[in-house]
Structures are given as C-alpha cells and as structure tokens.
Image 1 (cartoon, rainbow, N blue to C red):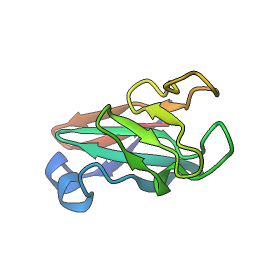
Image 2 (cartoon, helix red, strand yellow):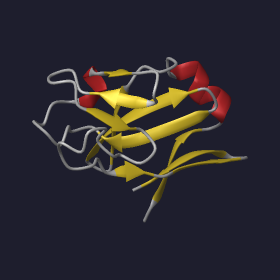
Image 3 (cartoon, one colour):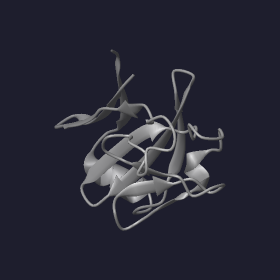
Image 4 (cartoon, rainbow, N blue to C red):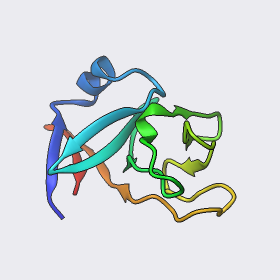
Amino acid sequence: MVWVKLFHSLSEAKDRLAESRPQLLEVSNVRICLVLRGDQLFAVSNKCTHNGESLSKGKVNFANEIVCPWHGYQFNLKTGREYQQRSSDLETFPIKIETDGVYIGI
C-alpha cells in the first residue's frame, strides 16, 4: 500500500470539501468517491458494483451510506457493504489524519 497526501491538514480538507457531498478524486489512476462527514473522511470506489454508475454523482443518506444515483443501491461508507446485499461490496480505502496532513492508502 502506498500513502498519498491529499491535504495538508483536516482543516484544509474541511475548507475544500462540502459536508456530506460526494467528490470524485483520481489518485494513481484509481477513481475514488471521497466524502467528508464531520471530522471524518471516507473513501470508496467511485464505481457502483451494480451497474457501474459514478457514485460521486450520488448522495449520502442519514445512515452514512452513499446512494447510487441510478438505482438507489446504498453502500456503507465505512465498510463498503451494500445495504441489502444485492450487489458486491465497494472497495474501501483507508484514510489517516496525521499532524503533517491527510493521507489515503492506495
């Protein structure tokens, strides 16, 4: 695993990302859906496992799930698990917040 620096600090991440709004991020040719929720960042594969739609076009619900904009499949942001187990789970990417920045593991 390679750790890639995304932001210089959590406060920079909060300034640049809208709360609970999925953001497309490409790191090392990997398309990632990044979501800020409070003081936490979540990163999952951007491609819905059901039909391939971009999850960064979706929304985040009250249950901390990313909802696919095509067919409403819901994936837990922490585990990647699809709510009703109708399709494969999403790949998740670890985020670590250090004193010198915010990193994602690829």
